Length: 148
Image (cartoon, rainbow, N blue to C red; front, side, top):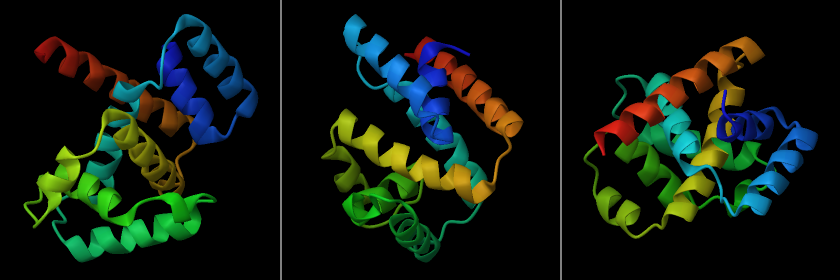
């Protein structure tokens, strides 16, 4: 597991000592938020959670639940969160593409990170299951990077 993945794991497990250590190392190295691993773990988690469901009402309910669950949930923009999930599911819903296109990479990573926290909590993953998800996410990052 690389440092980017360990950073995400620490965040998801609320292991603040490891998180702060890695955040400080990233800052010292001039690295930002590990966007690729967040994006790939989000992608996998959304696909697992929603499966073949292509229902905006289910997405809206999930985002409302996430906003209630998260301590900073009131700051989670509902329309943007719903659009990111819908786009991940390749759902052709009105306004989704336009909403996603106007978001910058940092905002996307922040929203996906918050939703990922809720997805992982809802799935009640053991630490071993979380490790498997993150290993799969690392593999997906490598595939995406080699395809670019």
